[in-house]
Amino acid sequence: MSDISSKKNTVDMTTGSATKHLLLFALPLFIGNLFQQFYNMVDSVIVGKFINADALAATGSCGSLSFLFFSLSAGLAIGIGIIVAQYFGAGDKRKIRETIASSFYVLVISALVVTAIGFILARPILKLLNTPEGPILENAVVYLRTTVCGILFIALYNGVSSVLRALGDSKTPLVFLIISSFLNVGMDLLLVIKFDMGVFGVALATVIAQAISAFISLIYAFVKVPYFRLSKEELKPNRHIIMHSFRLGIPLAIQSSMIAISLIVLQGVVNTFGHTAMSAFTITSKIDIVVSMFYNAISSALTTFCGQNFGAKKYDRVKGGYKRGVLFMIIYNIVIIPTVFFLSRQIVGFFVNEPEVIELGIKAVHITCFMYLALALIYVPRGTLNGVGDASFSLINGITEVVCRVAFSFGLTMIPVIGQMGIWYATGLTWLFTAIICNIRYFSGVWYKKLPKPEENLQKG
Image (cartoon, rainbow, N blue to C red; front, top):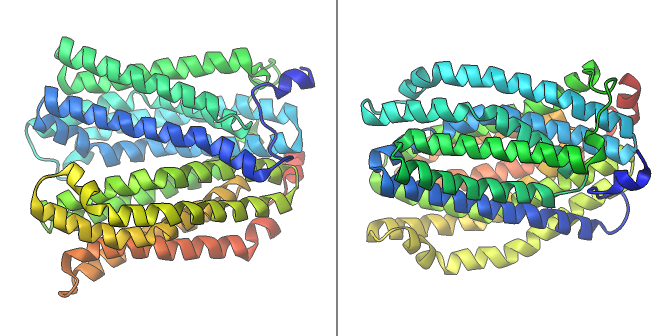
């Protein structure tokens, strides 16, 4: 494999402008997040308009569970991407290919195990979460069991996309995501409206779109990216790389799972305050998701940038990436905070017409929007520390969010003068405390002092 062919479809972030690398990498991710939200909205509209409200409730009730089941493959894929980024920065082409080979064993076996667990335990878990008996429960079971059958395809897609991003290519995964989104919407319309397949049709459409996207991404990788063209020797599983993938990936998966569980607990607190609070919380959560799309894109860019430079032992560039990430977040928040604050009535009113929900939503937005910078400052150290392979940080991050969200939501809402507004104070304070802990972890220098350097990993492999 020539050096020229190796450089196709890759971006070396160990040289050149860090600002340019981060922004060019983050832009496709940001656009991809927008497409994902567009699909989610269209999917909900199709279910609500062309099936019924019970079907919408059934698919909605599976959201947190789906997130939990999918978090393992997502975490492992990120971990694999971190390893690839570090080897890419270190210039070790052989180890990159061995990591890619080993990643298939890691992702496929893990996906099959999680699929079996999700399929078997779908009904018991949904009952445990007090999903209403009757059509909602039955539809939820069908939906969850069908969608978990797509975990293998999600794992393969995430694996390829994570490796491509680790090599500096964030544009190609965006193309795969756009294709998958349009396929999903098209299959939804066909199976739900044309063939009247109901909730099963919605779930099947998702699995079909995921499968096609996975196969397209694999074909692209093998044809266009030389690192994916593996010899028989390289196809042998590498025990060290497999264990390293789990060491990095499982904490990331646990972090996502813990955050999902804390959000389920918070939703339970919200539900005790009735319809108005539930509606307002749903709206503010959607606003927070849209606002944080930029944060997530910068965080992912930092993971690749810091991973490559850590692998190249350019630690000053890692620190420079962190500083630029903070600067990007400050500039973005100078714009987004006053925008959300002063347009809060229009934004909340876009979702609902009920005056009481709008008024509560405005108050809630005014609380959380001033904590957006704190939320942003979680994503910067998260992306940086993930990039250098600080596996312990993921657990610290997850535990902090769980403890804060549960403690603040229960504690504040029990204070009479605060009441239901404690829901949003809890959210803001959780962001603030988590941001403090994350940045303390970064500035402690543990990632630099104690983590094994990339050359040590190379020797072990």
